[in-house]
Structures are given as C-alpha cells and as structure tokens.
Image (cartoon, rainbow over all chains, first blue to last red; front, side, top):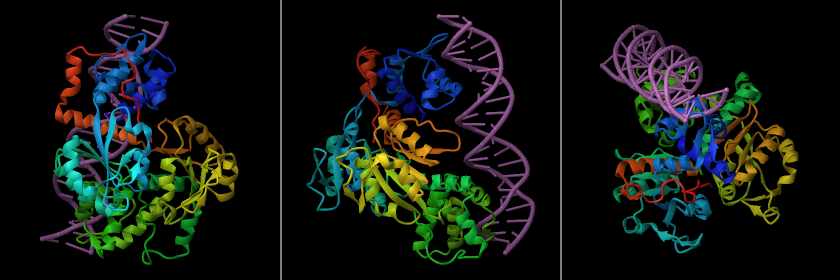
Length: 226
Length: 226
DNA sequence: ATCTGTGAAGCCGTTCACAGCG
DNA sequence: CGCTGTGAACGGCTTCACAGAT
C-alpha cells in the first residue's frame, strides 16, 4: 500500500512525543485519511491492534517498517548531478536510515571529480561496473529528459529493478522493473488547473471570447521540468 | 484530470517532431496509458478528434493547455531556500512558460540577501506583504518539516489557495485550499516495498527468524525527507 | 463502554466492445 | 474501412455499520 509510508511518518512523530498508544481515529487524523480505511489497511498486515484500546505505536512502527522492507538497507545511486541531483545528494536524511547513497554519476566532465556531500562524482561511463560492485538496487535518475531513457536502459541492463525517475519523460522498461516518477511540472499544472476552476479565472476566457489566438501561433506553455 | 499534463507533454514531443495528427492508440502509447482511457479523458474536454483520422496535435495542445489553465501566467513563490529550494529556483524552465517565480523567501539571515538564479532571497518576515504585492497564487513550500505548517498557515492567511508541499508533513488547510505533496521519501519507500517483494529479500526474514530485535530497541528507519 | 476487524454496500475509475461518423 | 466517442460491464477501493474482543 502506498499509504503505509504516511502512516509510518505519523507514527514516528507520535513516538517522538512519547505517545505509546493510538486509536485508529487519532492516527487516521494525523495521516489525513479516513479511520475505516486506516483500520482496513492495517488489518492487511495482520491484527496488530487491541480492541477497546488501539495500536501500540512502537510495535506498529516495527511491523510497517518490516512490511515496507525498511529493516534492511537499500543501496541507491544518483545519476545526474545537476541542481536536483545535488539537492538529493546533499540531503542528510537521504544518506542515512534505510537508503544509502553509494554513487553520484554524471556525464559532464566538468562535474566528474567534484566533491558533493562528501562523495566524489564519478563518470557515468563506469555505471555498469559501479552498480555491480556496490550492489545498487535503486537508481535515481535526475538527468535531463533527453538522457533519461538511455540511462534507464543501462541501469536496467546492469540489473537494477527499481527506478525513481525525476526526468520529465515516460520511461519504458521491461516487465519486472518498477519505475516511479516524481514530476514537479505535473504537480504545478494540476494546481493551476484547480486554481483556475476556483477563480473562474477571467484572463483566458476573455482572450477566447474576443477570438484572440486560437490554435495556431507558437507553443502554449511547454512542460516545466526539474 | 491528473493525466492531462502527461498527454500535453507527449503532444509537445510529437509537435517537435513535426507530427500533425495522432490516433488515440499512438498518443496513449506515448503517454503510457490505455487508449480507451485516453479517449474518454479527451472526450470530457469536448469532441476534438476526427473519426477515422485521429486528433490534430496542435489543436489538442491548445485545448488541453486551456483546460489546465496554462494559457495564463501563474505567479509562484518559493519558501525555503535550502538545497531543494535552490534546485527549484535554479531550474530554467521553472521561471519561464506558465509559472513565474516571483519570490524566494527564507528565515535564515545568512541566506537572505543571497543572489540565487538571478533573484535575491528575501526575508520570510515580509511574506504577507510580498504575496499581496506580487499577486502570488501558488506557494511552493520547501522548508524543513517543522516550519512547514506555520508557513502554510501564513500563506493561506495571505490569500494563497494552492500549495505545493515538499516538506514531509501532512499540512492541514481550510476548505477551498488545494495542497499537493511531493515526497521523495515516500517514493523510495514504495520502491523498497516492491523490491523486497521481488527478491523475497532474505536479509530481514533471517533477522526475524533468529529472533533478533523484535519491536523494542531504537527507531527503525525514520522517514527520509527532502 | 470502547475501539478494532470486517462483511456488505456504494462509488468511481477503468476497460470492453461497438455504434456511428468520416 | 479506420478511428473516435460512449453506453455498459467490470473490478477495485472506500465507506458504512456493526459484530466481537477486551
């Protein structure tokens, strides 16, 4: 379930506050979901609650971590060390607790060799070699769009079966490989859509009503990528 | 629809290649969805296809852009200029075409005044003032988790009704305000979950089988934030 | 009495399959 | 004949509501 990480985060917050036990109602509120949904989700992991009382926070944290595979370490490589790759590499929490960054790779010779967040950027030419040597199982693709599919093909050929893609392209991969995508552009566009609905935003309807520039002329807003 | 931006991106790619017309089948493949779904999605915008032929790329680009509200400019403020905020600010495509970054704000005095991507970082104390002056309608929150809710309350009070949240917390907002969340941690955890399922990953089951550290003892993997 | 776990109902998005238009 | 647009069937997720455990 995609909601387990959210529950886990809420539980960690409770844990820090020293809370020992939560009801489904409270936890659901903290996670921003319906309490029935939360109970059903948790019941799929087994019966870890106590009727009349609630869930023991610490125990539940452990069970969800186990279910998510977070009790073992995952070796991550970040490919593409532009602004975003740097931000990812520089984030402290990324390197610790569960996800270990074992490589920063880039194709740009002027970036290769730079020290970033305590790691040296390596040449993407050594990609296959590094993946094998270090046992990388998750690749984070933070390259420009044009390079993403090629990089993806290579990491997959090298044995990686999980890819987190920040490039604004739809990656095609063989069966058995998981791709997840994070796309700022799409999030912004969805917000713009809703924002427009609220305001009944005049700007554009005016333009259309006056017959100003229908289909033709130029690109209307191209996608915004990271 | 959350898929429209994906279609739009695929259409732009086709446009660059000089393709004038696409069938639902082709476009669906490019966007990574089922063709029936694509046709249904597009039919909600109106009848923009031609039976026996397909869709005219340029016309469809315009219609989807309109639907998404991308024919008007959206004014964005980025709050929190850490690694991630910097990456967002530094991305060229962000500043252009549809989303205009009108402010970079931070609470850290040592960052305020710095020039980043051609903009000067401003003090978050002036948040309300800047939002009003510049007509900000979308706030991007890239602060640490602890500050996010406070910042969110302030931007909402200042009139912003769309928030893109990168902080690893569930923001609570009044009705009528849209929040979208981008959370690297959750994406990685979901990947780890699937990865574990594939391999039948021995590591952890071993630990459990040998009775090693059940519930108690320490935090198992805390959430990873940006 | 309280709160979990869950059958059952309801709802919504997806997919099928074809009618109808070009 | 090809391809869109769409009613209808399907399936999964969500929510309700309550039985049952403590």
